[in-house]
Amino acid sequence: MADMNYRAVYTQWLHDFANDDALVAELSALTDEKQIEDRFYTELAFGTAGMRGVLGYGTNRMNVYVVRRATRGLAAYIHTFPGGTERGVAIAYDSRHMSAEFARETALTLCAAGVKAYLFDSLRPVPMLSYAVRHLGCIAGVVITASHNPPQYNGYKAYWEDGAQLSPEAAEAVTGYIRPLPYAGAPVMAEDEAKQKGLLQIIGAKEVDDDYIAMIRSLSVCPELLQAEGKNLRIVYTPLHGSGNLPVRRMLREVGITHVNVVAEQEAPDGDFPTVTAPNPEDPAAFKYAIPLAEQVGATVVFGTDPDCDRMGVAVRDGQGTFHTLTGNQIGCLLLYHVLSQRQAHGTLPRNGAICKSIVSTEMASAIAASFDIACIDTLTGFKFIGEKIQQFEETGAHTFLFGFEESYGFLSGTQVRDKDGVNASLLLCEAACVCMQEGITLYDRLQQLYARYGAYSDRVTSRTLPGKDGVSRMRAIMRGLRENPPQAFGNIRVTAVRDYLTGVRTQEGKTSKIDLPASDVLYFELEGGSWLCVRPSGTEPKIKLYVSARAETLALSDAMAEALCACAAEKLN
Image (tube, rainbow, N blue to C red; front, side, top):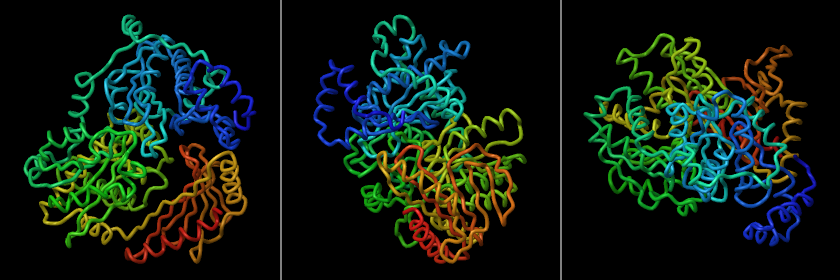
């Protein structure tokens, strides 16, 4: 529906929803033609990550009419699977504005379409929704969240029966059902009627929470150490106004971590996220309250989860008492090394073990896995692809899944959740800190040990925001230009090979080979010396993203190289 007659659609909405006073007031107040165009020139795309957008009225905004329409399309898709309507859909939501309302509308729209809905009674983390889909035997799941986006955003994530987000094929099929549907007139069942007919079930702690926490506890690789040392570990945790507060604290309490100091200013759920620009644990500014609290209480580890509690950010104290915020790649390598080394020490490391990471995550993980004779398998960006690998491993027996991560602060060590899990990650982080404490070192010291053993890797992620219709065209032009005239070097570092994941071809010195991954609009430049650079449009935001990884003998050298590569590549994105 891109490039549609936005003025005609704008007028149609004012007509179709004339009884919605809030909508009429908001749309009638628009005086800037560009604002009208941005709201109606296209529709929010329904992709493998569902939908995400700014709250407001319009086809290119998140609102109740967009949510109902998408849900009708999902329901139509479910109807094509025998028994799917009875198995139903699990629905969760986070602390964002309109999350609870959108979740309820999703449930009642499904009920009107004859699909059973399991609606959580209050906010829950994304990983708990993924777990609930499998635990309750649902055919699908929906969670209302915009992850770590600024407060003005919300979103609609859709999951399938394996607990992972929709595959590209399933998302395309759902889109096919959504596209012909009008925005007006979506049937919504009354809540009392839905309950009386057995189509709506409200679920709470006993249905899912208790089993989920027990499952997370089972992922501990050295539970005896936690019981022995957990009482001596001092940590600071911030839920960043989101859904992680209760499950993370409950899990830590039950495994024996008793000195948990929660950032009071960021403890309560709040869709305004008043203490941060964006509730993103990737941003060091997210810890502006947590680090002073850690210094006050003598904590050595600080961590935070985003509003839907699928991502985790970390800051650790060095031997001199200074805190350092870690990148997603650094956290991933620390947790990976912890899982593999402790399983090896306890004799539970399987011979056919495998880890999974996204193509834009650090190659240091590959080096760590190789040192334990464990396979490292790359996937496209998006944790659903790691979820797919877990499913394949279970079906074929080819590998035993041990750990998966993305540089974007998502981590997982279990198989009963098929998305990144901030509660799972919190357990592993505290456990790794206890191991280090027993050895008389810090997590920061452990990271330096890994650099000494595997080489110094410095990774950077930057992006260029290109909003609106013109921004979409600009992103396409940038990617087209890089494909038609691929750089031979970035600064003084030579390009040794180019991977084009859209065409599925890797080119090196004029010779081509096939890439065995689904098509995706990603360009990956392999550089001499083991460094690399990758460019891709974001699937959830109006940004073109740049990933850089530099490898050198020392961290100072790799840091300098990474900065130089970022500066050089940024020029090519203008």
